[in-house]
Image 1 (tube, rainbow, N blue to C red):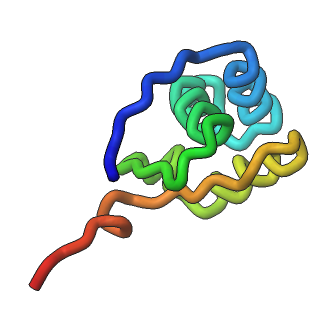
Image 2 (cartoon, rainbow, N blue to C red; image 1 turned 180 degrees about the vertical axis):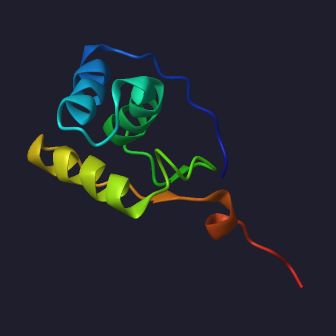
Length: 90
């Protein structure tokens, strides 16, 4: 089943996104990416798919985001490229 859920950016999301910046997972210029990741984390998305290999789909950054998530009592987030999660039929 597929469905769409609209979520609002709240203080918890902003706090988590700010923590990613403070701990230098990425720079301040990537704050919008951090909001995206924090939103997916807090709302327990199954997977976050992105083509942004510099700031999001990057093993070192993924480890950084998830390290902070776990220390702040949030779940780890699966972050993948769309190519990794697309099913192709023969």
